[in-house]
Amino acid sequence: MKAGRQGRPSDVRRRILDEAVRLFAENGFQGTSVQAVAAAVGVKNSSLLYYFGSKEQLHEEVLADSLDHWKNELPRVISESTTSRDRFASLVEEVVKFFAADQNRAGLFVREMLDRPKEIGAHIRVHLGPWIQLIADYINMGKQSGIIRSNVDADYYLFQIILIVAGTVTLTNATSAILGTESRSSMTMTEGIVRMARDLLFVESYSAYLETTAMSAPAN
Amino acid sequence: MKAGRQGRPSDVRRRILDEAVRLFAENGFQGTSVQAVAAAVGVKNSSLLYYFGSKEQLHEEVLADSLDHWKNELPRVISESTTSRDRFASLVEEVVKFFAADQNRAGLFVREMLDRPKEIGAHIRVHLGPWIQLIADYINMGKQSGIIRSNVDADYYLFQIILIVAGTVTLTNATSAILGTESRSSMTMTEGIVRMARDLLFVESYSAYLETTAMSAPAN
DNA sequence: CCTACCGATCGGTAGG
DNA sequence: CCTACCGATCGGTAGG
Image (cartoon, rainbow over all chains, first blue to last red; front, side, top):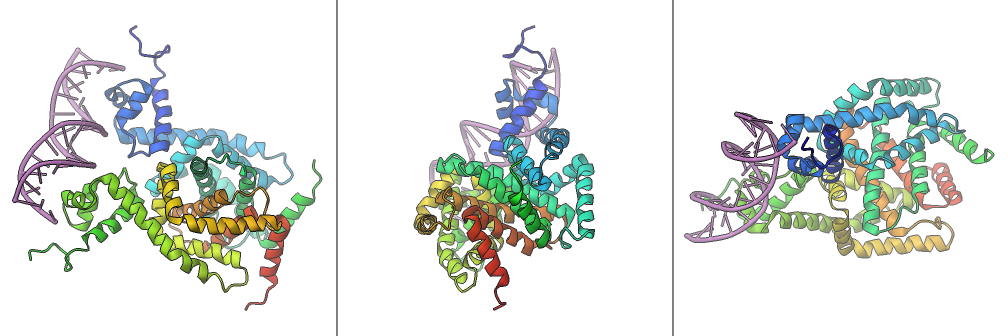
């Protein structure tokens, strides 16, 4: 075995995907050359193209890989928010934490939304369709019971919130880079998003009720 | 005169800038070739480079042009929100309207924040520094009088809000492209941003007071 | 503002 | 997984 720089033989495919998300998130798809990704892994561009066929196919696989990752993590994120008092708030909080902990994918997502909104929309429906449907059903139940605003479109709402979360996390990070400030108000930021998500969804009276509950509830 | 496709002789420079913002916003700086911009105007790439020297210089001038535009529009945006009951809300609303009406520049801004946060930060300080200082002073006054949260960093807050507004406007637009939905809840969206902006800034009691005032105030 | 031209880089193929 | 190679496009220059 002549071997490359690595001890292991053939996780190269995996490593290409990882470097690609990173570089796509940092510099965009157009701003990242095949050679740059290959070099980051330590192989030649022709080797990368042996695995992925074309740059566009690499693009697709990177996307599919991220959506797959999210599909696998979603149950955990949802279940982790189950125990709390204010379940809605903690769910949104979990989503914020989730994206904050995975900034490459969050950044990739934001860029994809800018570059090819329709294509990524289709991908999402394919990979996360059932989950979206599940949550949409809950939303529609809430509408019938009068808790949720009648003018809320479930699909639209979901996209909007996810985008605000991913966008805020990504761009707030960029803001810190500008100001040199450490995210000293990240708690407040999260709170702001939670309230926004709530106000967009619930009718005013119920939203107010949730706040009262959350604020007046005992610490435990 | 052999003339180009246009009646007028030499607003070419201006037209290059306009097409460039549009294309940079749509496809990003890296995703836009000099030739593409030139073609959109109806000239050769060498002509574009005659006016702007290099692609990077075009980039700078496009940025400077947008910031200049914002500098000129800011007074109007601020003054238009003066008359209303809840001045803070209407100011944020004006900012939302402002970006919504100028999606190319909003999109450019979001992309710049992703691509080169530090550089655009510097540009902003140069072009909009005095305005930022003005608003920051107001915020700091509010902190001393106890109306504004003590943990708010004025600069950081401003960036954050502008980003959320520009990001939400831009990406919500993208969302519509995915779902085919017309922004049927755009009013609600704006309201959500206003509340978020408020909650991030004001202490809870004052924020609640503003809401009460706004809701209980007579229609006129 | 154009014609003519260039070196570098790009994504990609052949062939092993 | 590499070497060798390619056509196309890119940003940019010369010279008018």
